[in-house]
Length: 629
Image 1 (cartoon, rainbow, N blue to C red):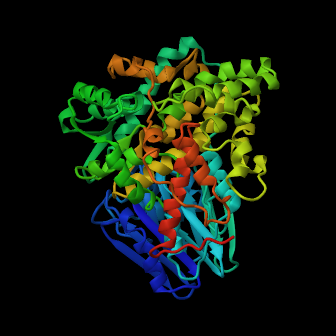
Image 2 (image 1 turned 135 degrees about the vertical axis):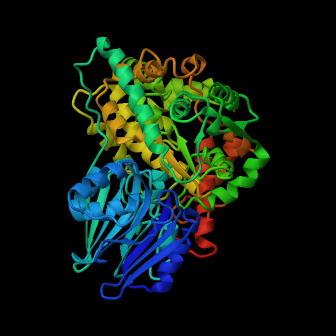
Image 3 (image 1 turned 180 degrees about the horizontal axis):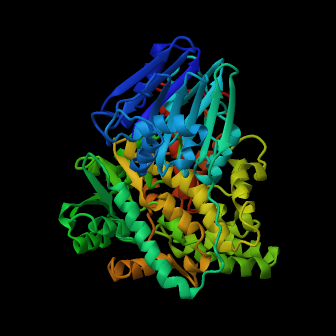
């Protein structure tokens, strides 16, 4: 992985060097710059060398120097594309650099280039002939890309903190961005918590016309379920064989590397499937696997990971995350996140990345398996929710919610009281809101108690509603929920978390289940092959039977939880009263309710903690972001 930055307009070489320096953790192996005085274009790049270590220096140019690229990611079909481009008459100077495929591919296919790529990427191409900057981000947004257009300057970077390092750019807190953050625990789609800063959405490209100063964005790909309803149970054996083949082929593609490579292993189905695929291509004794455990047994999965590693004979590495380690990690991790995130599993993800980096430079993960094959626990709540919504009057529901609040609070992982309260919370709203409210740090009706200003629920949940409404006509609750998790939660929570945690440690991660071919297969797979009668990942389990130990395939899903509810009672509350967009004392009230055991506010409190450390970092040492009303 790498870090990229650039701008067009006001600014100088010091600005691009500061921007690039802010991304040094993403690329410790080298840096490169471009300055074109005729167009006031500056590009900067930090490199983590993975493929073609000697030949992949950036910015990389075409033959006449009129096209330059800076790039973060990996293109897993770059050798196939190289062969196609050579056949079309393109001449390559490097031996096997995937970066040069972007240069030659842009010349051949123009702005259709992203549709050809199977990989994880964010890149910027400077086209001096057409006076254009072209940006693109991969289908699921595995690699980040931010941009801003203000004060005569268009700027972009892998992280928002790099934009803030530019002397001519300023940023102020956006109330709607904060509302979305507390509603979801992350900022979805193009949103950030800053008015002037946007994310290039997953599966989108952007063209900036230097002469006209105009921005045009384009959606080149969007995850949409298109189930083939002609498939029946009679097709299951063939589909299982195809599933296994696609998963293992994706693993093979992602094992291509010129540097040491390893595997995250939790002992669950997805990560174990990845190791099973790797063991088809290399001896188990040559594979390094990494896992994190917890002292709290209700959260700990390390024993399952150890048994899975023993089955394949890998070199297994494990570390434990206890409260004292977490307490020490929290400030360092949250202040380097670049964007506040309400997902406490950033801590174990950071820790497993840190100690994996001692042995390897690349790690494969099972991220995306739950989304592609229906593995999340809320699927089990869909049928009861539909029946409950149809049969229980509003008055009775409100009474049941009040009764549920009297249940004693358990601090365990997915305890019964937590599930009951979350279930009833979601059922207080129409069906499109069920899933996001089940996951929400702060439910819609309580947002106004946290964030100042009017709260327009449809606006706060606009991305969620789009996921729901854009599903094909007649889609089942399962399919709509799959689309929600894949298009919304996966991109802006899971992948954002993994990217930041890994890149803080200069580690590249690769998500096996997001391969183009595998995803296209899963999009057409009917829901009954993914989730049915309380069981998820039906097709994946069938596909892996015999390749993965039965105890892995048959044990209940545990989920990557963190004992944060208990830990938060030992952490000093942050002071957010100085932020005009938050109501005075809102964070203190939440913390008091949690400490006294009146309510379990773990998700909202983690959002407060993450926001506090993010703002502290942005307003401390350079770069600085203004917090304006």
